[in-house]
Image (cartoon, rainbow, N blue to C red):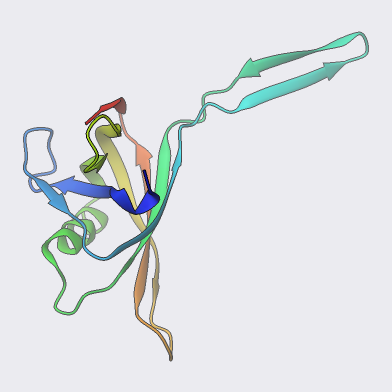
Length: 134
């Protein structure tokens, strides 16, 4: 298994029944399951609990010109309130898969003097994110 095997797809209609559309030219992906451990210390001991910050993920992608179909879905969602339905999956059979409704934001668009243009995309749960396998 390799990180490069995991790809982010958006539904072409923004809904669960749509067609998975690959976002082109993806870079590193970071998934935050949203359940960190929270420890509180007391004079006579401590307590540890699992928090619930909510599922989120971020990744970067190169910027195609002309803009690719998947990247256009990113901009459409961003320009219209951020609502989308995403799938993160690997081509490896039995690998972890995430899917569900999200809010999507384009956090940064970089146009460096040297190097390629890039987008930084942030996704946050907007309902239940389902973890399963491919």
